[in-house]
Image (tube, rainbow, N blue to C red; front, side):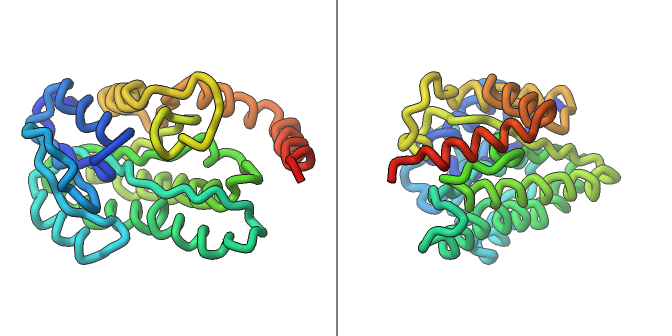
Length: 243
């Protein structure tokens, strides 16, 4: 579908990747961009339409759906990452919180907006996932678990919404140069603008899956060609962690 003339909503739009998505949509000619955030007071660009939205709050999702009845593109960008191993003391709380945002929040946004997109000609949904939807990093395992589930939710929605003409895109990236990944010392983090641009290109081209950076390309190849070796790498990193 065309980005030019579209009406889009971006969650988590007040900073980082969400802000980059808004800027990319405007640059591509979107007619209107709803910028959604739990606290929209920080959204000061006059070209954007601020929307108060906590995607873990069903009443706020319903209010946003009522307000944004002209939507043709939904960008599910908002996410939570708490950096917990699966058997850590805080893992249950972390997993529940990450699922509320990364899985249930995304699912409920699609449930609320899919009928609107259908009425408006089909449109598109892009869900921001991660390369860890394909493997488990033991230091960040609860987040990985949520992204595995979010991928399944995305694939399920794609099948269900095909008949109404709604494109559902899964977007994968490694470390993005935003506050969420500030803990990492990994070199060459991906610029948020690149992720946004590749996502919009995927929507234009009708893709189901978008690899937003080289890390996504590399991990996809490694986990498909030799998954046992990739698992062994994760085991090695865990076994050699500082005690």
